[in-house]
Length: 477
Ligand code: BES
Ligand code: MN
Ligand code: MN
Image 1 (cartoon, protein in one colour):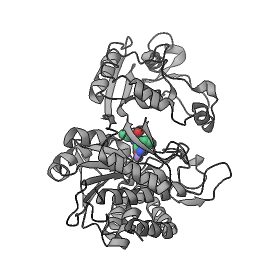
Image 2: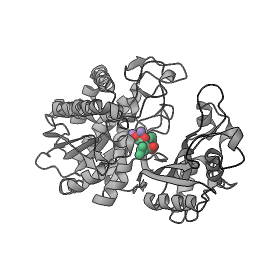
Image 3: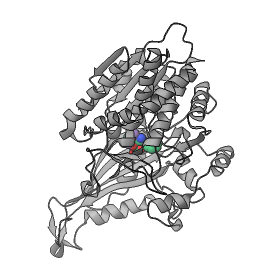
Image 4: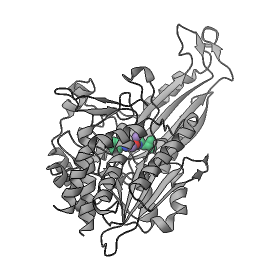
């Protein structure tokens, strides 16, 4: 029996234990954005470090982090030294152990941090683990760790002799704010890596695994419009002075023109146009916009966005502006006749190559200032940002990943992009010059960031086998 077959057999035999280990990790509410969960976030890092030690990584450390925002959440850093004679790439495996907040809690069918295994539904989802973080990203990090566990058992080495550095961070869901200085501080060590591997993306369909060769960037802001120095009676003051909610919504509604293009001057200046080759390739993918919409309760008429582009082009290759939250005034029960002193919104932009998040944020703020409603003033905050990336599709490591997925699943992976953002990828390209291979096994209906997030066990197994065979591929290079 080949080494690879031995590893695959072990993975298959160990499925139930692997799912139980994932469930252990999912019980820890590692919500990075909420300070109330600080010690849980650390516990999740420790749990992960223990697993990496158990599967045989030689140095496993919990590293403290800092940024201008103060103390950050810890990073788990581990290495597997290569066996003599290893000639393949030094791979940096990146993942995150932090999760998004679980709210709205009342929409969960089972508590978000009490994972349950649900049976397959006919014509619906397969057998799955339901919990916050199931697919994003603990379940996907576990695919790699379980692949290493099987390699360790089969060969005595967690990556079959290949050289790996593992970096699992705890701030991805809150913008990876401490990561930049961490990468700077560990530049010498990380610079030795040739390529990054991230398992934090999705497949094209349940039976169609994929390699993601690009993600979008992000610029995230929060803006507040202030008017009077106090809340006012809307009968006595309505029509006499600015209402910041009305004024804010009037300004923000000007963000798009009738073709749903963003109106900020200069916004599209650095956008790399889509090539005809890429447009043709995407058009040929087995993807139905109407089917995707039907899964989120919408009809085909809801396929709206920037004029002149298909759904996939809009998600993968075009930038957007979104209002993610908006508030002010009275939102409690009943009615209150009030003109509030201020109103706020969270406004973010998804970016494509070669847009610079800092530049987009300053263009937006300039645009707002030029539209300051009479009698009002802005308070403008830059939350976080990250560059989008597009990686070459003809690299030897990407070819190795593609062969691994084909061998593990029997299906040639589709080459896709994603509209989501993974800030580390742009950072690594920028600071270390390395490209990322995104090998992810999520599904479009996994409810990422939503109540009842799930990871299907079949996907987890496909991913574990693919990671195991990726290791096999690079050890044979
Ligand atoms: N894993 C996701 C991004 C993703 C999901 C990419 C599915 C491709 C397919 C990641 O954890 C995420 O949610 N990123 C955030 C960015 C972050 C700065 C908050 C995002 O895209 O909103
Ligand atoms: Mn993620
Ligand atoms: Mn996420």
